[in-house]
Structures are given as structure tokens and as C-alpha cells.
Length: 153
Image (tube, rainbow, N blue to C red; front, side):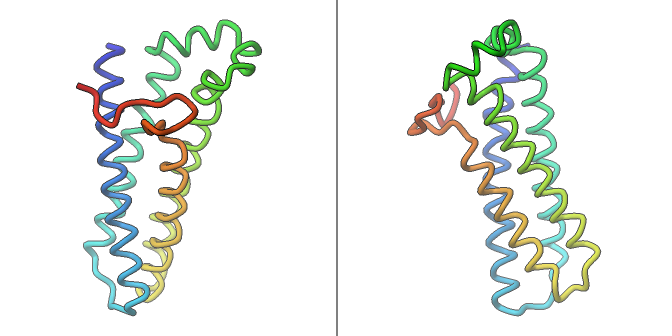
């Protein structure tokens, strides 16, 4: 189960990154171009938020149930905090991703409640902040924290 969840988490990351980038671009084009509201952007916001939720669920399964590394961390949390690699997974990664999910949700829910002429701006700001958190917390192959491959084969 660990391997399946890990691979799913690795690949859903790309749905998050792609949908988040598309949402940011569409929102910026609409906001800066002073375009009339396009409901397709709202749907894209829904898909982005859903992808973030799925990714969070998979991550929480890894964090609390399946990951042998996290089990070692939980066995001696204090010692794990002294290891930068383990600290990244135990605290930094999950904290940044939860922040990203909250930002995505707040942006999506509040944008839907705003007048149409202000929705693009809200999506652009909150999707941008969520994506910044995501991009900083992903263990990219060039990352110093604990590099991971772009695609698991």
C-alpha cells in the first residue's frame, strides 16, 4: 500500500502544479486584461482545489499510516528534529502543503462570493500564494532538503 500511495502522491503533484499554473495564468489574464468573468476560471479553481485535497489526503496517508520513514520519526521525534532531511518531511513539507491547501480553499470560496469584477484578482492572489507554498515544499531533484525524482518509474 505504501508504494501505491507514494506513486499516486508523486503523480497527483503534477495535476496540482499544472492546474495551479493554469489558474494563475487565467486569473492574471482576466484581472490585468479587465475581462468579463468567465465561469471556466471558477471551474478551474474547483479542479485545482480538488486536486489539492486529493494530494493532501494522499500525503496524510503517507505521513500518518504508510511511510516507514515517518514511523521512525514518530519513534523519536526529538532526535528527528536534529536531522535536516527528517525535519523537512516531519514538519516543513507538511506545514507548507497544509498552508497551500488552506490558501487554495480560501481563495476559491471567497472568490465565488465576490462580485464578478473582483474574482480574477482574488484567484490570482490566492492561487499564486498557494502555488508559491507548493513550489517551495516540493522536494525537487535539485532541492537540498531531500531530492526526489520528477517522475517515479
